[in-house]
Image (cartoon, rainbow, N blue to C red):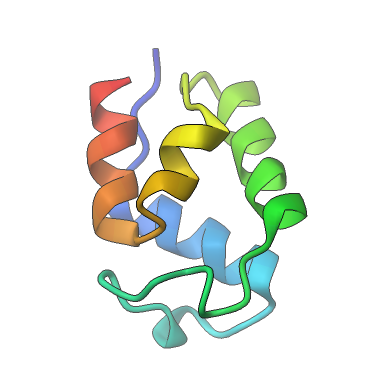
Length: 75
């Protein structure tokens, strides 16, 4: 199983949101930043195809980079 780094998560989020990497704060609610279900599923599929076991429900339960680092490390 592959674990994602904080930098990978932040970079992927910035990419799907179409914003500069520096605009993504670790504690920001990503739903407030423009993340929707389609973009969240894009991330889930990308990370699963890379070997990280992650579930959409876990991501939307607490949509921050900090929380996602914990979720993907525990997976």
